[in-house]
Image 1 (tube, helix red, strand yellow):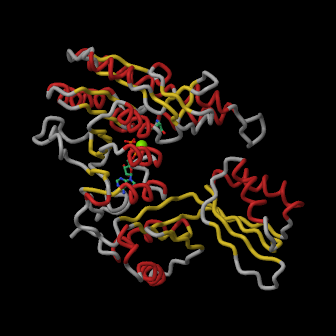
Image 2 (tube, helix red, strand yellow):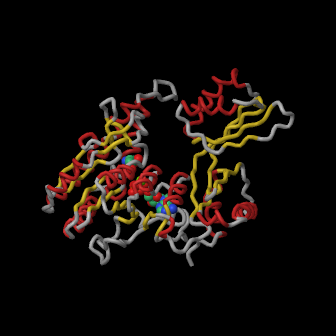
Image 3 (tube, protein in one colour):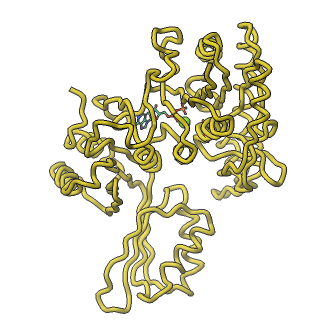
Amino acid sequence: MARIVMKFGGTSVADIARIRNVARHVKREVDAGHEVAVVVSAMAGKTNELVGWVHDAGKAEGSNLNIYDAREYDAVVASGEQVTSGLLAIVLQAMGIHARSWQGWQIPIRTDNAHGAARIQEIDGSFLIKRFQEGQVAVIAGFQGLAPDNRLSTLGRGGSDTSAVAIAAAVKADRCDIYTDVDGVYTTDPRIEPKARRLPKVSFEEMLEMASLGAKVLQVRSVELAMVHKVRTFVRSSFDDPDAPGMSDLLNPPGTLICDEDEIVEQQVVTGIAYAKDEAQISLRRVADRPGVAAGIFGPLAEANINVDMIVQNISEDGKSTDMTFTVPSGDVAKALAVLERIRPEVGFDVLQHDDGMSKVSVIGIGMRSHAGVAATAFQALADKAINIRAITTSEIKISILIDGPYTELAVRTLHSVYGLDKH
Ligand code: ADP
Ligand code: ASP
Ligand code: MG
């Protein structure tokens, strides 16, 4: 007998027929004698709809600015998962399985107070372990938590992955299966590169980079948690026939295993290509070149919860002033510009420019640590397609390149092919 946490994403629970199919996956594991807890997302598109309503409600009449209380955002958007958890429990019960739905606050999944993007702080596993002992399948609403102010919180978009891994860690599950609409983690998003290949295993480090650089197949925090708590996490498809042979293989189910680097025998130089659309570039010209300037700029942006990414500071030509360029998600541009205008008198800069509609494409691979020339290959390949590079950042295992949005697909395919990732 094993203890398994099964998570089903939005497309997997998009309607009642799919929820019935999910229930067959759950039944398979229950019939195999395992202890099972299930985590569900809202139906596909539901969270977007709820977020849209919040934005509309927050818009003052005649204005484009939408201002709303993040606690109420959470009250609204957490509702999508409440619906699917109840529906799946009903379907499971009808199949004769002892199932019960649980909301985040009932477990409780305790988070911090950062409404809208809360971090899980504590889950007392004993609540769920008791359910296992009663032979119950707990169907848990993903994405939800309980904040210290005693109100509902949500974990940021894609947060049900994190709910599942955190629960798996709390109950010391043997496995956490993330069921989605693709049958594993691919060398790049299979939606934009049909030649992408499924990876049997991906290291935690690479998955962390892929997720934070745009591959939304797993939420970044879920990978962090899986890495820290050594949760055996598989990404697999809910669209596979639930009763196909091998589906309940305990050690090697179909899908991609996220694991320690040393479990991967054949290491490639480049493992995958990720992309993030909707980036914006902000440039400050003639910023005073003195100690404390970067802190003076990026401190207030961080306080405003703006996620600053690629930062490039030019060498000062005259020793007095320099240029500073960085990227933020497009949705944060207005907020960032407002912060920068506020601090302009203090920091001192001349021109403030911004460019929307950029994309960041990234090349990821642990093998880069020991291989030279990986970056040069990317730059040449993009140059050959006349794709202009706006900014570059690198780390030990990744290269990120900022380009104009319309070239995203072409850049991803070009890089995928130049590193030999295409399937033959
Ligand atoms: P869910 O609703 O199940 O949480 P998501 O839409 O959040 O599913 O994530 C699955 C999607 O992630 C896939 O449909 C795919 O388009 C996208 N994706 C992006 N990069 C990758 C990748 N490298 N491998 C697999 N899927 C990827
Ligand atoms: N329903 C939430 C979202 O769409 C959480 C999730 O699906 O993981 O972001
Ligand atoms: Mg997701």
